[in-house]
Image 1 (tube, rainbow, N blue to C red):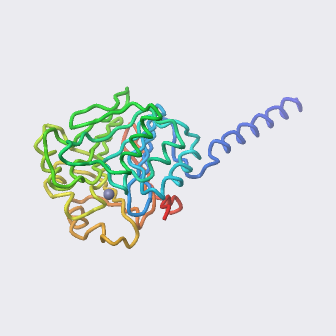
Image 2 (image 1 turned 180 degrees about the horizontal axis):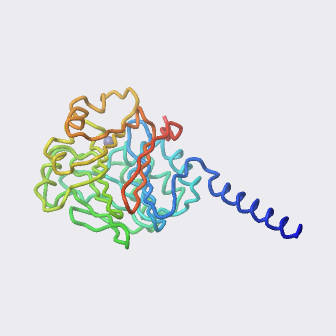
Image 3 (image 1 turned 90 degrees about the horizontal axis):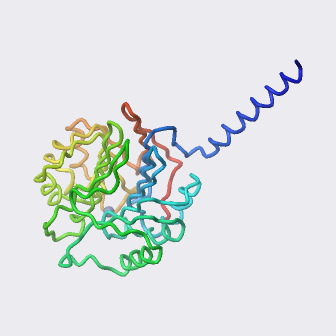
Length: 297
Ligand SMILES: [Zn+2]
């Protein structure tokens, strides 16, 4: 009998040790069957990590160049070595700066980016560097415009909402790749730095823009998140990525007021730190963590 009790005790101890091991990383918010979305605090830049229920990994933008190492280390600490989809919303430094470091640190299976017409002159030394890293890595290149499907699985899918085909803009921000993520009954909308011209064109498509969680465009600048766009998207929650005391004064008061008037619960990375959303088969939850700071500057 004593031996049986001792065996049970050893088993219980081992089991609790294993579960402790699983939770060894306090910043690992994943749990069974949820989509876990991190909206990282990367200062005045953008970076979000989506961990889907089937372990598909999607990284949307990767901060400024100096943020790449911290972002890579955070993802490595989640025991992730492969990124299924690296999404670059548009070729500005605060969105693609860390990408070379990400290519150096992970196997990147697919690179998604907006299809931008030659006339917009999207090329830069930094963008060329990132695209050549993707070629070296032999990542699948996926240029996208509205309606393009990135992935479709049993419980989730991700499609492009913008850039809308044949639209020409004077600002590269408006060519941002906007993504609609459906998981179970929840929807998330990532708008990059899309501004009012791009928003107006998205509204002209027949794509349903309704979302539960809106990643606010262009760090909360007043030139994004128009009333008409908010009316169509009807988010319950908004997340703004902006740096503490940034020189652009993002997010602008006008944007915050529009969100307030639309009864949208708004989280800012400059005041709340990293924002974490977990989407379940029935609803979602939001948490924040000031200790997850991946701003490399
Ligand atoms: Zn930006």
